[in-house]
Image 1 (cartoon, rainbow, N blue to C red):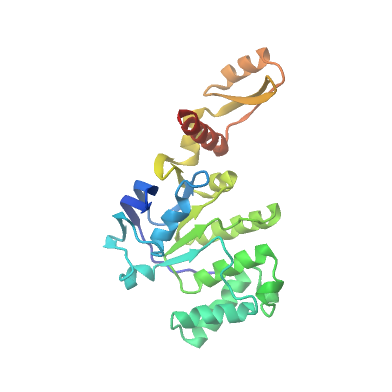
Image 2 (cartoon, helix red, strand yellow):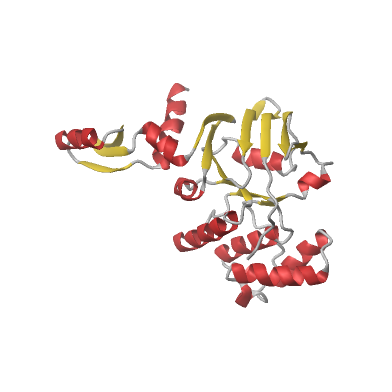
Length: 287
């Protein structure tokens, strides 16, 4: 499947969103590179979904700005808005529509010719492995199939930027891996993708870089591997007073020496989830 060859860059400067006295996003600065698969990570309430909502212009910033290819993004910026397509956590499709009807309705919203809608729908449903189920109504689709259909619907308009808010929420392990393969294939065609997820292994597998947010503030920004290496590539898990405690080492030999002196311990590779837990835990301990 060929996607649009156009590419976009997102610049976020001082982005802030307040709801009364509560600051959901706090002076966020980010640059998402052209064609990058970028992840937003953080605990509940970190500001991930609020950031996506401002990128999609569903919410307006309290202060700060978002630029796409250098142009200011707001609700009046029709040209910039058409470059983005958003997939939310909720299944935002009518339950009585078939897949074909969902795709046709999306195309008509964007004034696409009927022939283009039909050709693109065939291509996308085939790409997602959904073509044999196209006459089935949404209410009779599995959760994984609904998620795939939402991506097909988003890709119908050939966006340059895809915003994904928890795209695999509620999926079983097999469906999640199928979705990963689908997203990798999309990104390999140079589409810029921003992902929020609670599945940290998902971000480690898919993302070129990740931003760790906590309480609306940016804590860390780097590649998954660099963040892992900063913490220590080798982890020793040890039972201490009935609790599992992880210790991290940059040198394998040092980790093995510690392991040889420990009781009820095991050695493994450090993951991005370890980085996430250490960052979130450090923030909690400071409160």
